[in-house]
Image 1 (cartoon, rainbow, N blue to C red):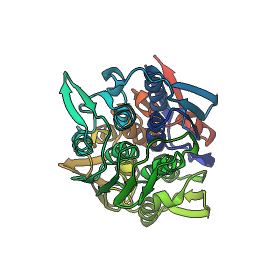
Image 2 (image 1 turned 60 degrees about the vertical axis):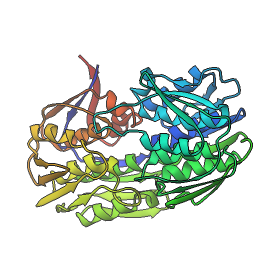
Image 3 (image 1 turned 30 degrees about the vertical axis):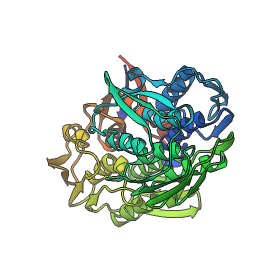
Length: 418
């Protein structure tokens, strides 16, 4: 099993390019199931979740070609298998995004229930109830969701709470439904907007993506299309922290500052110096870090996927910061590993209280999930001495060769196996 060895205490300096967004690429890959024609996707990150989704599509009968490293050509002309099995769903919950497209185009789907994960349960109840409102018959058989429909019919759906994958799944289902579908309390995340852009290029009629109400006029069929995936806002935020926590200075290119406005505002209020050089480039330098409270919220507010990284930053800020996690019920598992390195963190329910300015020292620590892994790399870079991080396969799910990017910036990090 791969591990990271990090020798911290060295400022990161240089220029880094941000990869495409995994959380946009996955639903866009699933959208290829909606047409027999070829969908070409550019700027895909080369991460484990993308490889898993490719395997799922190929298992169903899609032809998936990779003409270059960050491009896939997906043709779902001859689909024979309408199932996302547990073996894949358990390693990547986004496999559930096949449900909407399969039911919409083929009238049938079988998707394993994702169950729990390290950061919380994340049930798909809202996906299923919305599909039922669209006219699908839903049965639970032996841990699998079995869905069927002659043709979905447009309707009005109000999500009980904001759900990104739920919005994406039902939006994909509705594009081939008969009539009009209105999604209320829809997710506003950039990844939802990116999916809507791809679907529109394929011939879908979608209005309101990026607002809390999305209107979809169903069409008879969709065509192939070519689309470039948006930059990964979470990777961009992670490198903002990397510069600040190591007393470094970075130029971050190929990003979209508009997607991380709340992150830039909060980081700036803590003393991090962030300058917008262009529409796709930021310059970030460390400053005199001061503790600031933070609450995770759906877009456009502070994203839960940067909560762990922000905690890492606050361990080195002066004063006390309170982090309130409102999205997932068990997303502080990284805190105990940071405490092993000298961080002063207390967990009280859905809040973490960090007394900053504490000296960090290297230790042997364990990654529990994707974003926790990134936060532990960050504290390892800031700590004195050597840090060994086990189970780094988590970070490979969402960061494209992060150790190589950090090495180019002067970080002393290497991957190894016992």
